View 1 (cartoon, one colour):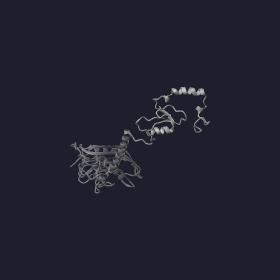
View 2 (cartoon, helix red, strand yellow; view 1 turned 90 degrees about the vertical axis):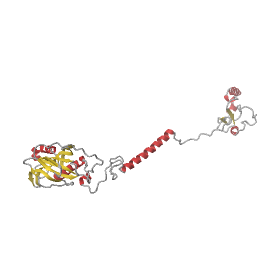
View 3 (cartoon, rainbow, N blue to C red; view 1 turned 180 degrees about the horizontal axis):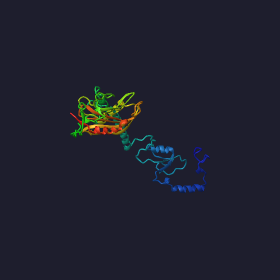
View 4 (cartoon, helix red, strand yellow; view 1 turned 180 degrees about the vertical axis):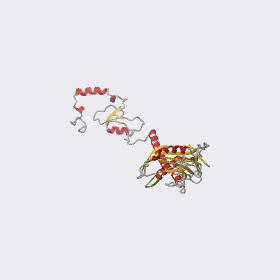
Length: 354
């Protein structure tokens, strides 16, 4: 009998409790069952028969003819299975795979990701080493892509340290200077330029005026005093000088950088602080056929006792093909605006001299 719990709960097989008529009907139905056909792969038997079949022996029910076909057996039904095909090893039960080996696409994705990480690390190391020209490079003056700057010479002048000359720069093309405008001229041979000279109230400058971090010496030009106050005298001026701008015997310079540095030096050296600047012009151009940087701006300030509260200023830095750049500085206090047109006029009149 079946153990309790595998039948209907009574301890007896349900077939033993059928009426005779029910058993006859069941027998007729079994005759049509695929289990009853001799060519069927289905077999019904005990767990012992199953074990014998898997071991290569004959499956049979005890007490029956071993040559008989696998007809449905009467009695206890304990197991149902499919017979393994003749000559074939029984298949192992499937193993519950928790991790699958990646396919071709997965392996490609892993490889691409690894290469990307390695590439980023290499680029980061090269950037930190200045190989792309953004930082300091070797003494050859070029990074991996040729954009680097050479290390600054400790003996270089202040302006050259602030604005290292460009490396591998082509020499500027100098055009034949146009003839100077008619009229009187101020000539500064040390600076290498000449420019327009004006009559009264302008008079010749006879001092050596220098200041700021760049120590530009203004020795030539014109001026006149606009007022005297507790701090001294205040001037309108047209002054020229020169400033070392290159390293060793080089003549190439960064016009934009050097021009802005000279402008900043003028602002901090010669005007009350704090002050406010309104930029009117700032560009690279040519003066007398030579490369130049020109800045024109108006400064606003408030110095106790000084009537002037603003001033129109013009600064031009000119590449004259020497190790020193020429500088022209023009200033017109706000109390004498009738002379404002001098700023543009004198800058335009600049010509190179030998």
